[in-house]
Amino acid sequence: MRRTRRWTSPAIGAAVAGLALVACTGSGGSNPSTSPSITPPLPSGIPSGLPTGFPSGLPTASGLGVFHSGTARLQVTGDIQQTVEFDKIGGTTIWQPPDGGMAVTFINGRGDAFGIGGKAFTGTQKTATLLVASMAIGKAIFTSVSGECDVTVSKATSTELQGSIGCDNISQNSKTIDVTGTFEASA
Image 1 (tube, helix red, strand yellow):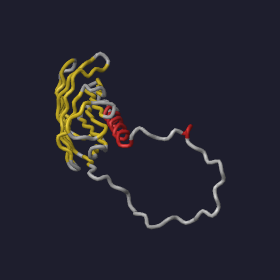
Image 2: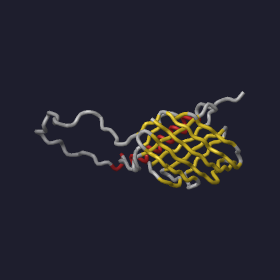
Image 3: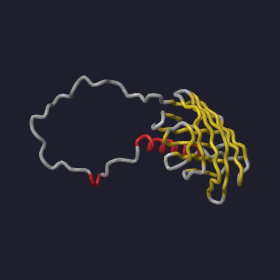
């Protein structure tokens, strides 16, 4: 009887979502040790009321896609020889127009997972620090951040995302694989 690792899909989903967040917000931030301090006293006569006339409601991201269904298929060769089918979306999967972020995770009932995350784009790009591809196949987890994979996003709207992936020589521990596959997600 095969035991399913329930931590794999959430872990890949969290990693992909975290990379999308970094891609959307950049790597900047303030450093508490260099933040200025207020040493002079505050002036008197500061208005006590709050300004009025500001817009209300939450901002919305133009073109944001939140996908609830999707499939992917990976053909894995090398030290692992397997065709892996993914029949559902794992967690929240989002897409924003280029210069936004994306976090796309696919899962299956066996505990396998496949995810792409980082800065959103259309066309073809190699994996890098801001574009990560991860695959959990059986007990092996592979992550590409060094150009081993070409990710193609062929269709990207607020209701549909389609693309493909091709990877050469992704190594993890003592295993090396090549991967080709397709993916699609919809609202």
